[in-house]
Amino acid sequence: MMSSDEPGTTPFHSAQASFSKFQRQYQQTLDRWTPHVLQRWLATFCLLALFMLRIVLSQGPKFDPSLEDDLLADEIEEGGDQSVPVLPSQRDDEFRPFVRRLPEWQFWLSATRATVVSLFCTVSEVFDVPVYWPILVVYFCVLFALTMRRQIQHMIKYKYIPFDIGRKARYDFGS
Image (cartoon, rainbow, N blue to C red; front, side, top):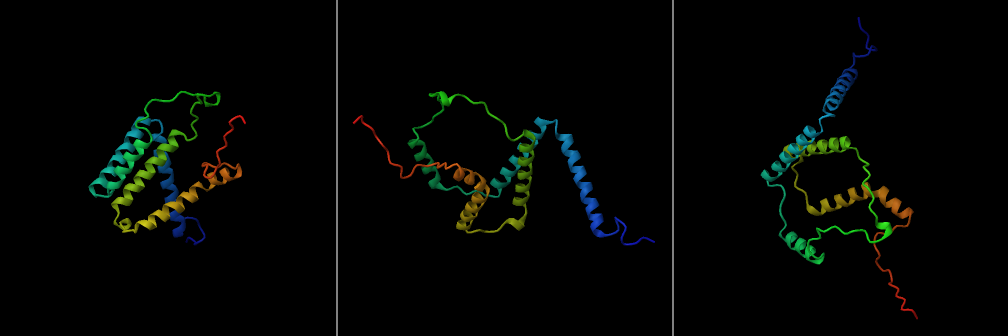
């Protein structure tokens, strides 16, 4: 006769065993996909295309007609298309090679997970909730503040101000 103290007899232990088995299988699948870079990215782009097709067919994104006027005005203000790269003009402006901080594997895995979750959320009726747009703006601001908190603290620590509002221009005409 088995006592209830033995491992594997409680529902918690069986659920934990099932979860660890699922984790092992998931990791084995990821390990098999690791060397196939092109196939992984093609699959991710197919998932992304499927997600975009889902959004278009469900008539999700609504186009704001005033946005086109704003974009055109911004392009005119910037002086048109700036497709010609500018060469460095000072010694400190010299070319510095790109240093990769995010490995390709982690980027692919995050992009694929985000696409799959997004696709699931658009298909599920649970997440189809009408929302008043100012709430979304506040939600965006809160998320931005939470995710940028570390960068903003770093800027404050080193007294970096990314804008110069109110700075007085000083001109010395040799007097």
